[in-house]
Length: 396
Image 1 (cartoon, rainbow, N blue to C red):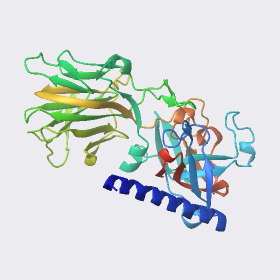
Image 2 (cartoon, rainbow, N blue to C red; image 1 turned 90 degrees about the vertical axis):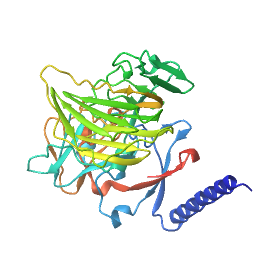
Image 3 (spheres, rainbow, N blue to C red; image 1 turned 135 degrees about the vertical axis):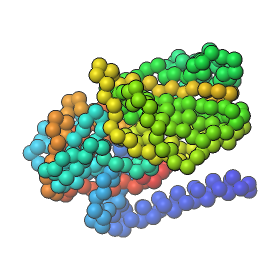
Image 4 (cartoon, rainbow, N blue to C red; image 1 turned 60 degrees about the horizontal axis):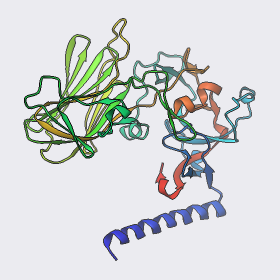
């Protein structure tokens, strides 16, 4: 038996052991229960579409043993309070799954798609509520990936000095006019949402917090690659190269503001390197081959009168020659305000014994923005495992 076959067998046995343990807990103590996900409010984390709706294991005793924490996933029962008597017609069923974002004694505000949380009765912080790097990755949404064979289908435009070799775009700026090396995403990034059939539906609101993910191979140490993200009156520029340290710059209106990117980082030459550059919650983060190498906060965005948010990301080869693939525009969760009554027009205080819950697939989620906070005594438990379909197996 090959090492690959042995590895697959061990993984299969491990999964069976976990399922057997969960089944034992269900039958013997009733502390674990299975829950079928219905609706798309937690896309892309939890799905209700082919190859079948996700089935999750829920630890029913979790909130008896541990205090609910911010951003915990929560399964809860339909509340019986009068304020829930007339739920929207598309909110069906007796159990729902959302993400807890605020506790009793706090207040919540949704503004420009961001979530602000602070103590009730006091001023709200000027920064959105902080999330861990792991949670930001879990809540990341991929908007459009460049198809080199037909870039226009995914709203990309290639420079004149680019060529396509299989799944890669090769850009060589030798002898080209300045600026010819830019690959541009030509659409505004909006709050697209995923419907019940898994289709992406174009949103109406422009999303501020965007990112770029790509794999680059530098031909030599002289090659420079420049990624740009834009928000309101700011342009954030990341320069990477083989013989020069990583550079991060904020162009705030007409004023360039260098940002401290930390320790010098040079990309290796001649091999593929995975890069992620994100602007989320007034914070710039860069990952190189999965490792977080830059995490820099900045002051609030520059407002320019009459200038709409220009959030079209771009990637340029400024010098030398580079091979690029898997170029993807990403965005953060954008909490829509359309049709919402709570936490939009003014800060919403959370009463004692209740919590504020939101869905990640914001436009397609009915949650506390619509029906208010949820009593803790309606909490069923915390989902911890997707166990069906088998191809979707993962811990939450």
